[in-house]
Amino acid sequence: MNATVLGPALLAVFGLAVGSFLNVCIHRLPRGESLAWPGSHCPSCGAAIRWYDNVPVLGYLLLGGRCRACRAPIGVRYPAVELATMAVFLAHGWALGPTPLAAVRIAFGCALVVLFAVDLEHQILPNAITLPGILVGLVASVWLPPGPRSALVGVLVGGGSLWLLFEIWKRFRGVEALGMGDVKMLAMVGAFLGWEQVIVTLVLSSVAGSLVGLGLIATGRGSLGSKLPYGTFIALAAMAASLAGNRLVAWYLGLL
Ligand SMILES: [Zn+2]
Image (cartoon, rainbow, N blue to C red; front, side, top):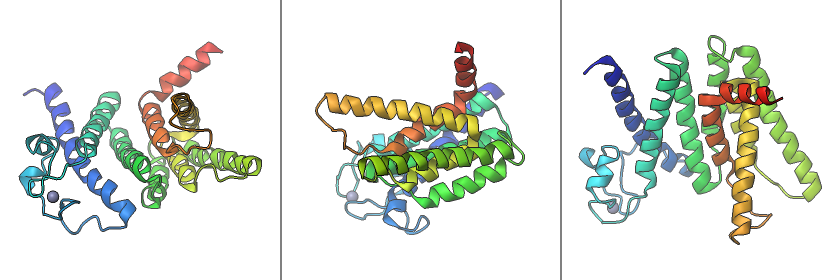
């Protein structure tokens, strides 16, 4: 196998394995359970999962999406998260090459996968991800893009603008529109991507969230008061900004 095939193949395998661990985080973090102990078990019957059933994606397919012991269906989330994590690894490897920045952005992408899934299911964004995320992003920025100044301004712009928006909304509507989890998550995006890309993320996630919200209202499945998992949209937008944000900014400035 030559290097052009070997690199992506290794990234894909490593991505699937990390995705398998992210599934553990997604299941256990919102429940306050330990990540290290006990080993993987079926959420329905508690049976320990054999190592060969735990092979990413393949295990799910070979079991027909059901627990070997009790036949309870296994959430499609498990293979989906594994494939999404593989995509995070491959996309950043392709966009940034074998660089320290790619490694940092892959770690960032993994945090986004967890926040995406946990927010979608539980409407919470765990501090255990967002707060260390802000710190890691700021520390990495000392040596790597976007640089410490842009990262620090990114934290303030990302967290600050959303916090201000919520405060205005609270005064105006008298309701808590969104949580502090979204504020901390966007601050984390700012720490990793810098102030320009946190604005890109804010715009993309607001547009996507509004479109989906309007779609739900139009189809009678939601109302203006419905709460959307905004962190889920931030995760998608931040991923796009991490991979193609510079091109998006250049394209937009070209329009002016
Ligand atoms: Zn079971």
